[in-house]
Length: 265
Image (cartoon, rainbow, N blue to C red; front, side, top):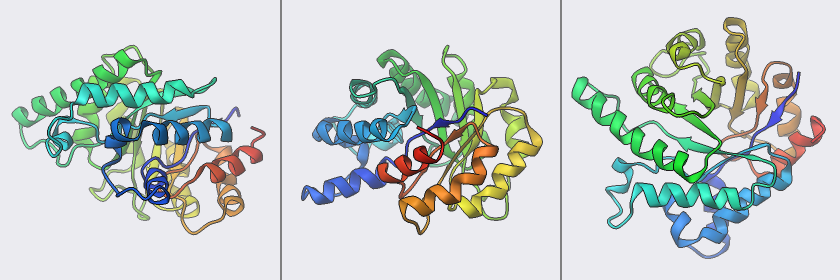
């Protein structure tokens, strides 16, 4: 099975880079404007590590989040995040990173508002040249379907990922089988999980995804307690199940490079 190497964490790595530079920890989307060289450097490190798909620094760059930052605009910040990744992409694809909103819609009016929020972010990313749309860290089914519906309106591959508990379901009780059914109308190019637990504890969820669907699977667990070599070793069983593998919180370019070495990148 051909495996594509994804990237690692955006937020935890940018905060670590900021700390080394003596900068205060901030909402990472702001770095697209205040420290673009740092965002560009991290994306370049993942490309050098062998990532075939890198996430633009656009997670949570949406209207509700930016209400806290007067003068910041979704379209400008999303465009900057995609552009910075494209500048160092090499042969890698750039994915627009889309997050869940703070709370699920309670009624039709809320759902329409959520759709407008996603339209603004996804439209800006598509216009800036994103190669695909990556919905990640979703935990609730209504938000996932709203985001997927809006993303499906664009002629771009759609990757969809939820975060799961050790129980095998999201904390709202959604199982991998239910995720696959929910997303079926939107024809995702890949489904799976990110964040959640470390590679070992998340593996049963990946196996369940493989049991219930023939779709390509993506797998970006948190790093857990690890070294680059131990992270790569713990990820080996996933290589028989998932076509797209990388890491989430705590996963560094060194971890991705070690994983890439295991799959011949």
